[in-house]
Length: 158
Image (cartoon, rainbow, N blue to C red; front, top):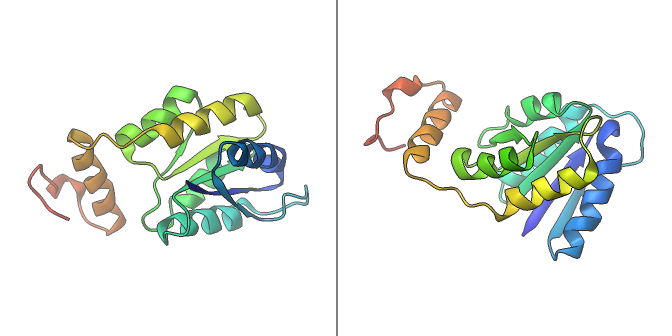
């Protein structure tokens, strides 16, 4: 699988370690940004990773900033990106299974790198379950288009 990774300066250590972990598992890693510890604005990296995923240049994206919040908010502004915060291994897995998330975000300040790696593994292994969750994803897509999600029903096509 091709994975785009990015972070601001507060996530550099986690992303550097995660890149090694993913390569050891046979994934192709696209590292966005320098990971040099120099101050960077998280929206820049979030945009590049989310755009890599939505443009089809990467299968999934992983982002890390200080809290995980800012980088997740920024990634979700890219049309077609569905970013979620992986605050636990189960949350990362459910983000794929129930929300069809294509980008997972973490806190570089408050998450252990081993937990991040295990969460990313769960995220990458998980498949979208579809079913009732597909209707909800269609509602998210409706919001993205500026439409009322309440108008999306089980039979509505998008």
